[in-house]
Each structure stands twice: as structure tokens, then as C-alpha cells.
Length: 141
Length: 141
Image (cartoon, rainbow over all chains, first blue to last red; front, side, top):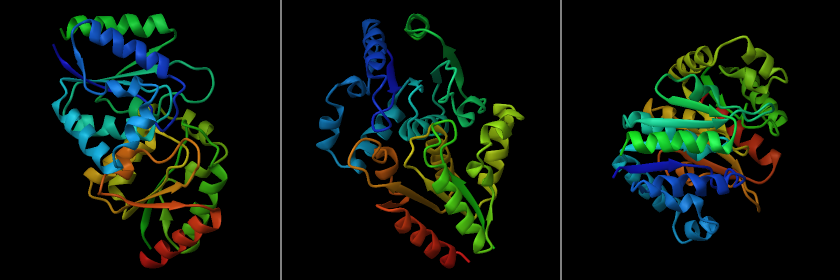
């Protein structure tokens, strides 16, 4: 059982929340603990409302420091995910980045794609990313 | 004359490019150097296309390390800006964050708003942010 810090967009936009839910559910099915499970909640804004931004930051930084592995789904641009990826590097965490291959805008930031620290996977279909997540779950079991 | 690293969204979305142009132009009018002036270019994707993502990252990290002050306009969510803000903190750079106060989504990430390192200004109008930028330019002259 590994502790996984999953990064996805909250305030940046919720277009991919259903994908986040599938990823988190898959990771959990392998017995791993997802520290940031609330990212897939349809009520994430309600959950966040009960805390100050500072308390959210303290909680997330604590979880990040405890994580065995960081997995980020970066297709919806998010300030918080970019910040978490840089912090994950400074904490020397194994960090896997997923980005949907898109014809139009929102291709992965050069700051992430160009930083050799990260392992980046671009994927074309939901099946594609879920298969890769399965492989990771096996590998880190 | 100070060296300013201005952060704004590129691949995350270009809705605020006209605002970026006004901010950069204002900063330059005070005699400061804006290292990341290309962020306001209508041809920023053409400029980026001539470089690899790794070369862009090396250039931006070099500029960031040389900056006297980091100013970020965060209203359009951007993975790169979030990453740059975390890196600016680890480089111990004075860092000022601007975010438009919005009724709907895209309020500032808790990872930025909740991290006590940053000086955050929420603003309501273009005039509001430009006045604050003027004050900063005077202060850092």
C-alpha cells in the first residue's frame, strides 16, 4: 500500500472531474491510499468552504510531504497543480504527469514538459490513461 | 532599473493577453526591464515554436533566477504560472500575485492564496490593477 498524492484542477475548472473520479477509484482498487480523494468529489467546493485557504494549504503540503508517489492529471490548466508539481520536485517525490494530447490550446506547459525532473505521459483516450495508471499501480504495489 | 519576471498564462489560455500587454507596457514606462516581455506578444506561440520545451524551461528558469521582483497575473488558470510561483519562492524572490475578484469559478488557488509567502492583491477593475502596478513600479524604482 502506497500513499498517492493525486493532483487535479479544482478552482481552475472541473471539466475533467469524471476522469479524476475514475483514476482515483482505479488507484484505490489496487489497495493504495489516495490522500487527495476529495478532488473527485462533486461537492469539493462545499468541502473547501469549511476551511480557510491557509488550512487547505497546510493540509495539502502535509499530505504532499507524506506521499510515496505524486500523480498529476494536467489537462485542465490549474495554478494549484503547477505549484504542487514544483513543490513535489523540491520534496524529491517521484512525480508522474499526464496530459491529454489536444489539437488546440491547453497543451502541457513548457515549464512542466521542459523540466527533466518529471515523467510525462501524453495520452489520447481515457482507456489509454487508465491502462497506464494500472501499470503504475502494479509497479508501486 | 529593476529586472521584473512577469508571469501570465500562455498555453493555459490567452483571454487576458491584452491586460498582460498593458501591465508590461506600464512597467517598462518606469524604466524597468521585463524579462518575459514575450508573454504579451500576439505571436507567442510562434515565438515558442522555435524552441524546444526544455530550452523554454532553461531560459525561463535563468530569467527567474536573475529577477529582482516577480509579478504574476493569475486570473487565467495556468500550470506554468503555478510552477513559476513555487520556484520563485524557493529562489526567495519578492513575489506579488494579482487575481481578479470573480463571482464565478477561477478564484485564486488555495495553494497560492493560502501560502503566506506571497503578497496577494485581488482587484476588481483594470484601473485597479494598473494603479497598484504603478505603486509597485515607484516602490521598486
